[in-house]
Length: 258
Ligand code: PEP
Image 1 (cartoon, rainbow, N blue to C red):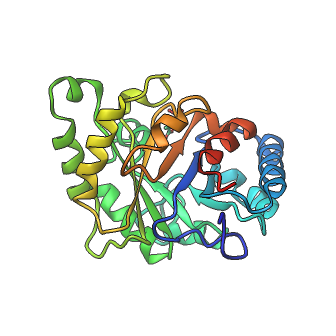
Image 2 (image 1 turned 180 degrees about the vertical axis):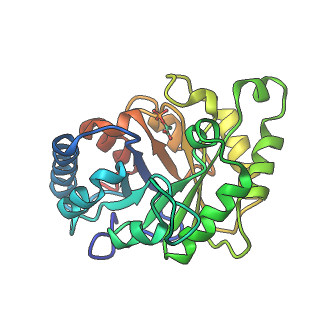
Image 3 (image 1 turned 90 degrees about the vertical axis):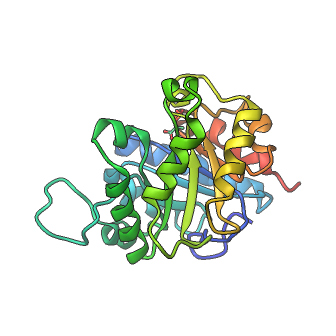
């Protein structure tokens, strides 16, 4: 189940996805160790994994991690891309460059980019269009701040992010949505089951049928079961816990087919 192609053409609609966002972590040796460890865990499971698995290392590690994971069934993704395919954009990376490295997915609109780099819904929209142009599936991150939730605006904020960020022509194969309450990212806090279920149902009504909707925000090997069994939750986007192979694997095993 974890992959259907040489690296795992992981665009199977309706198949749950457990994705690791390594963020800006890891030198080459760390990335190689983590990739080897994951590959061994997956190989030892002998295909008995009920979800797709994706890792999104820093750009500097994509080539090496991709080479290690080739044939493992674990998919590779980027953490951002520029709207243009090439040009004078110092420090940026295009979607075509990610595809050239074997990426199948790219995370876009993560709150750390919305808040740390001033990315608007319009910018995210251009990046999603670029991802699709390059044949990548876009993982669109949406989520409210603590203040917005306390003000009762969470659903309205997320709806506006979806409306402003998703270009025309979205399909269940080209789009994954990750609901990540900003206040839950890296804090150890998680949304209540009722809030997650309600938000995922609201998102479901705004995206093409079959679109995978992930939950993200301090998911770990202890809280993952309660979150992943919720209705309309099709997997997880995992930050901190994805840096430890055993923890990340334990989250993926929530979907064990054994
Ligand atoms: C994330 O970076 O998308 C994320 C959810 O991080 P963490 O799991 O560390 O909260």
